[in-house]
Length: 393
Image (cartoon, rainbow, N blue to C red):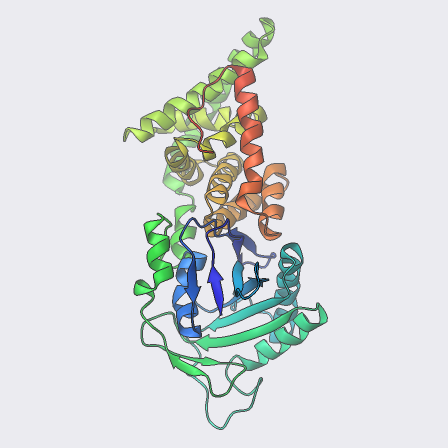
């Protein structure tokens, strides 16, 4: 059917909100793997989108064969929420439009689709091709919309849940059905786990990761005014010395100290988090910190961004969420990137970097292309005389 290759993969797209969904690109370093049948494809979905999908339509974009006799390769993987309250016809149009945009970016003309929905109990016989099976009406409308965009739906299947032994069936071929193999033993899953890629039990695990802790936010808010006053005094002093870069260096040093502490197991206290919030209000400081996503301390930095997203009140939360989104995007964790961007834009809809990353994610831009922002950040750090540590090329 299709191969999962070892080149940088496009992000899977998580169309999980009323807004067009977030693209997450599975930047995989795993060996070349072949998906031999629909059951194996379905079992691999949690690895491909990095969490176990529920009540979802998952669309796999197929890249064209790269050599004579070779099969199509797996490109972007898109997930759409089936609980958005839209009519099926309207939902099919929204999904087809998003898929067509990604296909255009990838120069792809074929896709596969899977419906995962616990409300389905399997097809009843007799059944006809297309709309008579559970989920068939949505798939039929989706296929018509795709055809208008010159994209072909090559295969479509349904299953109640991604669990071993669950029955799956085709929504296009009345004679194709089977039992789902254990997703935990899928070779794709095994390869992704060996590559250190997280596979979450549900999307809610990711949303919980970026949920605000109100108690922490209140504790931090107590220190914000003092932190802002101290920062203002440092800025005025730097301007009097004609050294605005000195102010920015001090802010960057504060953040880097906290990352080093966190890497050693020491979590920041509310006063320190308030100081970080104020430091991140400087755009140059935020830009430089993008470089950490491709460096030796990427994991510790991302852990700090998670802490800040959970602990910061008000619009300061958006700055931390953008750093988290960029870090997740660059390492190929599209679901977390999308959820972090949702948090940023919900807090500050006009945040320019959040808008930029959100557009890139939805259009299927590859993580490697976004590394240019980190490279630019390295140049700014050098100009400021700041060492952000070794970089992974």
